[in-house]
Image (cartoon, rainbow, N blue to C red):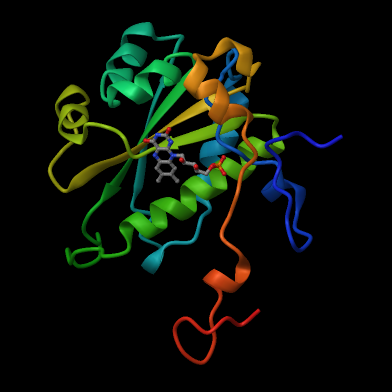
Length: 199
Ligand SMILES: Cc1cc2nc3c(=O)[nH]c(=O)nc-3n(C[C@H](O)[C@H](O)[C@H](O)COP(=O)(O)O)c2cc1C
């Protein structure tokens, strides 16, 4: 039987897509370094505008509890509640200008998204789960991790192995056990003019 969080798709897609989901409950099992390295290797090979590779990842694992606590403190409190259980947090940053000419890189966040997408899929292939967070305090991260001007702290990912939802507080447990939903293809794929479904 398929997992309740796996996507029920209208069209067949690769299992790495259907099996990726963002958990709140994490087991305390650590992530082996070769697995973490593979996730960043996957990010490294993402496409980017002018091959700028504007992403920089700052890792904090529970092997270094002070680092972990520091990065955890950069999350908004509701995210801290559940992300504190994950064994790994990663701050994802973007360089805001092109190294080739110093011009602003308007698609840096787009390219970070591609790199993070690669991380999610490589994680899924390894039985790991990633939960991305925009709910962070970037200015705090900048100070605590000495992030220079021109580099923007953008998101944080928690990475680890999903655990039994019973370990969660009530509100999160409900979310964790609710099936994932999506807009229909007709709503997001248009043709001819905006709003006219292609499907
Ligand atoms: C860029 C980004 C920021 C997100 N920020 C948060 C966040 O701050 N807190 C949170 O609980 N979930 C956050 N999420 C997770 C989304 O809520 C989640 O991906 C969405 O509900 C779809 O669920 P799924 O990933 O399980 O398919 C974020 C996801 C993305 C991609």
